[in-house]
Length: 523
View 1 (spheres, rainbow, N blue to C red):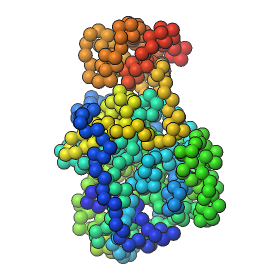
View 2: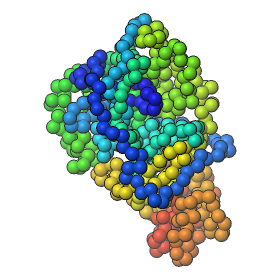
View 3: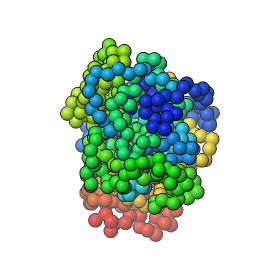
View 4: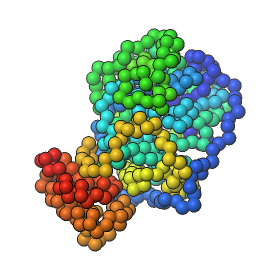
């Protein structure tokens, strides 16, 4: 559900009840907040990022080719356990009016980080594997939580008044930017005596069959965003009841679900000792086996996903669409339900459809989305340039700096990272990466060959790191590749000039031996 405190964190209420509905745990003492600089090498920032300017109109759409990748629910078991595919709570369309007590107790700020602090993205990967979704992981540009995209969007919009944040980043394989959520604390206080969001969710939804122990539902979606291929994880508050279609795709994407269980407690006791390594999954290993998987729930279509929030009728006019709309849009959540109350007495629900009712908000946010796409591309290029390091984006006082972390530990176990092979050899510019982008990269290298300068730091750095022999081979390769792009039009091209420049061209014998370009695939 969508509930915000004074830091605008979004979270799931924590309860001591097995059903997790209608009961709240007494206030507990929280651990002290972590320092935003923890584990960073502060002596020399790697880079300071600036908000990019508005780009010329592009034929590329902001979000396209939306696909379901996977989903899961967390349970409150001692051993980290997810229900796959799980299901969001179902909307009951309760009649009005009704009265609720204010929210109290604790809630999750980042449930994934709380339950798996060293591997917060592992549930995403394992849920995708269990769904049987075909994902070409090396072709993905960015893997992230929606939260990270929203923080970057706020930085773009708010400038110096943007709230401080940190996002840990690393590289998967040769090009995939992996963004891990970082919070000062994974839990916080659920209410200040004036908030009713959790109570509203409990009063208007019911647990889906097989998901009675759920503490939050998470959905994973793939889409193209201004030329980048993104996989985004986000929490889902509710969904419309009903059966999911068998093989829908795109905005109504769904996959055939495993048989649901009417008693997830029985499943838990039966499968409590079953680990990921015992599931039929593409990847196994000691590290990833620390996550248990229960099969229950149903995969719901994207068109039935609902975002819930509440507002006092005295402040409903202050609803900040510049913050709410990106939340909906970056997860392609189509339905927005707003519960309106007066001191806890709910009298109406206002329902809005993102497709039909929010054209004005979308138009207002389009420039921010365009800048966000450019920022993600710049961060990806920077991460490729520093592929052997673990970095962090740190925003303080509206200034976004990049620092190296004093660790080599990945946010994913080694057996999962193996799905991102280190190519260091020619790779295909394909899977949503447009030939126009290849032309831009080739153009940057052509300028360097001619003695000019380019804005791309990765291109310049890559060229400086080449010896004269490698440069000669690279010149021949660039000329050949540029000619091939022109001749092949929109067909796929195998190119050495990816986002990281000529990092994979450090072996001139390999370049000359392979001829630089696989023309067979380009025809």
